[in-house]
Image (cartoon, rainbow, N blue to C red; front, side, top):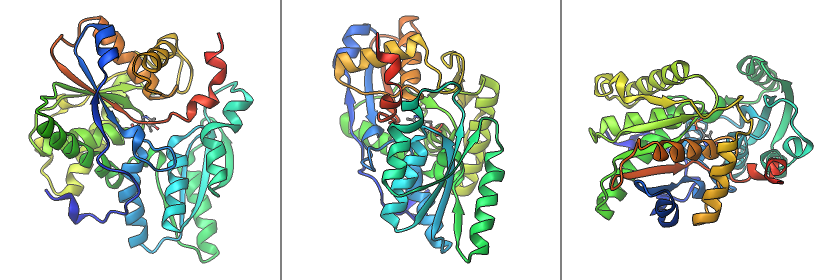
Length: 334
Ligand SMILES: *Cc1c(COP(=O)(O)O)cnc(C)c1O
């Protein structure tokens, strides 16, 4: 299956580095921990949405769109990368924000990603209360724009549809190539999973390559059955879109551990704060409070519980979000 048959609009710096975290590995005394630096995709502070947007923006251009519409939480890394992609592609960007995190302080409402959205010229059309039907709200904005003769293109939350998930099929292939170059056998891939496109693309790509690389998603929002169902459905739709038989993927290839969500999406947990401090102070890796911090908290806990063995090679995908740290300054003041 050649990904080159899908249109791609270049936005990022690829391949991203795959490197050992020597000090964190030594500190935990478990498996060798490698990090895939998708925080270094290069698009306006980077992150995992850049890979998805390369395919989504190309699709939008093919459809003759002149304005991108998307949605996310106030500190959405996806919204920020979409704003950046629109700038590069010469399109307008309309963002709808859901006030999903309760009792958030001013810095959450104003700093970090949302500050950068505005800086890059995206229009924040609405800030809507938690629980709003965001898809319907985006459709309404698109309908208004069409009436004005515009050509809107709606990107779902997190860029998670089969077009966007191709970005993580590409990442799976990139990892297989890098592991071959480095002579590294990858025993596990671990990353934070939210809107499911990252994990769906990875499992679809690894299965299409018949690689046998297991993927563990650490959940940040939904409970396990729902999260796995979302990944499974999107992975199969992605294989379909790629023209690969869905039978290459087994339901047992989709595994999410949602034990590290805490009280909810975007809400701090002690293990997330510990993981962010530890990664910063061992190998100078800057994680984020909503996704990669909880993902790393899961990885650390599972290592401590002996889930991964000494001598195994675990690749943690750093999905980005570092600028979200500024929106959570209050949780690090001790
Ligand atoms: C969006 C995001 C994720 C989750 O990726 P999904 O494809 O939505 O599951 C993980 N980490 C960061 C930093 C993100 O912004």
